[in-house]
View 1: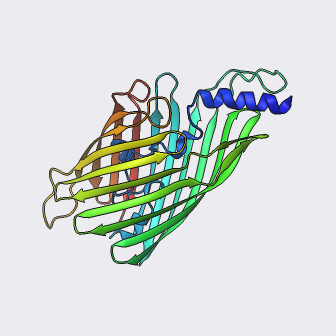
View 2: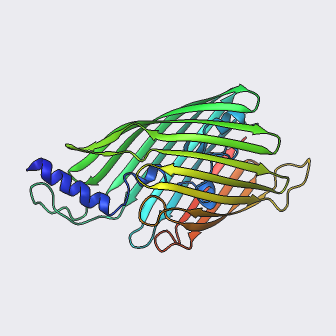
View 3: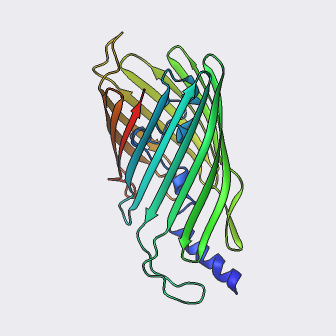
Length: 301
């Protein structure tokens, strides 16, 4: 009887979310969100450990770290999300970390013994550590290990381990990347188990003086194919000068409406001052994700 009740609670909880642990495939930092979730073929930013840590080994910078806050999917019930990330590069090696959390509003229901669960707030947490290596100039590989914890109800919690592997290649104005993420089998909630949202992403970016144009395709297990096209414009950039203080971003993401990450448009802005970055993003054009917001603060040198 306990096993049947656990499975029923699991099905009800997952039915409201469409996919297990959406934190593991949703964008959680403002640059990724403004670029429609794309990032596997972009240069390294503070949250590169979530996008493609191999980019950190190819970076000309030594260090980056940042924090972000998201107000995610305000219709019908918003999640509050936080993301912390950073990496350090020494020669051909780079080491990165990522911490993410998603906190839903309190839900009502009944526990295994019929006790009321009013006031319980479901949450997901993920912590990752990884390393990247530039094997030859322009080509880098990375691998990360992640621990995941999820609480769908007061008596329905699970923990799992998974891994990411990725590579990135940069030659002239072209940068390409591929990554496989959330590899690790199932997460167990009591006696019931459900697959982690494993995914494979591939993308290409073309860089000019004034803009980066990127395209990315993702296959998400149990959901199917998704695609993103985005641009990061730097209208004030000048050749031979330090990085422009302004970046404007926009993208369109296509995805299945009933599971995974549904279609939406996105826009954002980045402001840079002596290594300090302030980034903002907003989603639109989606009944579920429209008006989602992200704000982040990071520092790099």
